[in-house]
Amino acid sequence: MSLKTNLHDLSEKVEKLDPVEALGFLSDLFPGKVVFSTSLGQEDQVITQLIAESDLPVHIFSLDTGRLFPETLDLIARTESKYKIRIQVLYPERQSVENLVESRGINGFYDSVENRKSCCHVRKVEPLKRALAGNSIWVTGLRAEQSANRSSMRKIEWDEANHIIKFNPLLDWSFDRMMAYIEENKIPYNPLHDKGFISIGCAPCTRAISAGEDARAGRWWWEDSKKECGLHAK
Image (cartoon, rainbow, N blue to C red; front, side, top):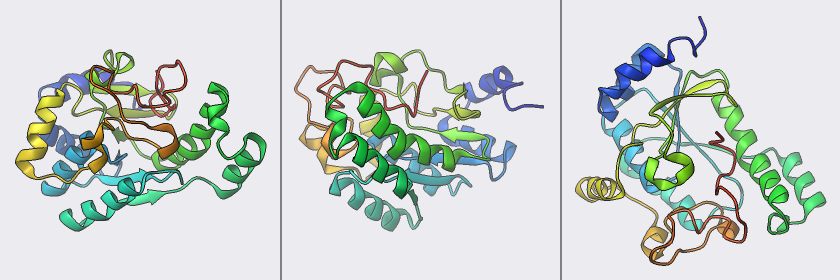
């Protein structure tokens, strides 16, 4: 029986559970096959805290693209220290990065959407595929109100690109609810968030946003696109 077969039934069960209960349920259903990809955003920090404090058997990993903010890398160390956990850090393949830079230039992603997507593919999509291979559940920190592209997502979805079930436990959380939880539980987060960087990715591709701007307006601000890198393609 394929993972995709009983997706509807699985979705109905998970919808009735809170995030910790749902993560525990999925971990029991797919032992050793549940993984969480954290980009160290505030949503992801909430999920990391839920996993660590509840001692859930969910493997946590992150992608270091080679172009991250120093504050993001420091947050990995702070998070590991606070929760006494180890976050697996994956890197892009060296030869792929060297080939990309040779053909497109060190900052070629500014030149076209195609170049930018090629950079995201090499630095993020390929390492993600390696991390997800052989697993059954991919946990993410997506929230519906982050962007129009994410508003139609469901808590349990089938990710065709990676042939895996995607679980978005905080999908229906508001920004205010998330921030209240972070404050109440003293969860460490990236100090750049307090400087207007709401959605944080690679340093050359992220800027602070102004009041009233969309939460993801600071990502790839020089182009008109859906503001996605390909990790969560619809």
